[in-house]
Length: 325
Ligand code: KG4
Ligand code: ZN
Image (cartoon, rainbow, N blue to C red):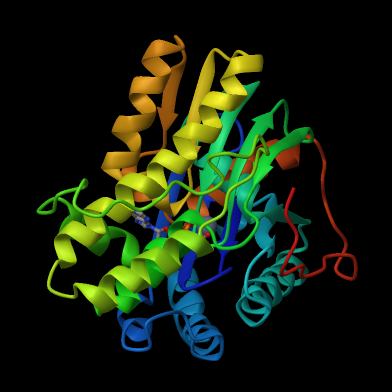
């Protein structure tokens, strides 16, 4: 079995995954959303202190598995440096005391593996849209090691733009679920926001301009909160689907997936589903509980890392806050 630890942002989570069939045997996550919501975003130093309390408490609950562990997996990149350190320190201590190796895991790769939790096999190659709080990327995932970035964001991410719109409207943090909820009661055609990078053939994403359009709309018509959310969500999603269609003009795929915290968005899922239907691609999404950050996805990714012997020594495991693919 592998014990995995996730602490890259504001979720403290530990999982136990069985190596032979990738079965998830234990999983617990303690979210800090309430603690950060009054600040309108994650406060790194507070997040680190809360991990230092939550992680040992979760660990206590899975002590019964310790004697069967073969490796300790931990998210070491990307994320907030002060919170990554909490998980990596705990992983090193466990590795020393249990005398088993360490597996450093890339958090973004973990999100891709959220699709295969509790599943013994993976589906590669696959076209993957990663939409999280820190990243918006279109990826051609060929294998564990070979991930080609087809498009990435030039500024803000998709999820982050929801957080910023929610903050401007005073709706709280995290913004994704509240903006999606508010949009259900709004008219997506009420505000005529422009789709970012519409006239450039460049395969890239950008959300800072749209955020500014929303800011101006709020200044002018603050009473239309639901319509602003609906119009923003509509255009933010249209931007993604526009670039996705561009990729599909020159390449074809059998399998497509949306992963990351914002993949929980039902409007986005529905829009992508219709593109998949037209292009005869099967759409894969993670179980709702595993869209946002969790250690189960890190554990599933670690099973493949274990088979590939991607172990790291105590001194070689580094924190990389800003790595991508
Ligand atoms: O993957 P994740 O849990 O953390 C990172 O690795 O960043 O993603 C969190 C992001 C936040 O920006 C949150 O607002 C966004 O995912 N999110 C959503 C929804 N649920 C979470 N964005 C849009 N719609 C949602 N329903
Ligand atoms: Zn994440």
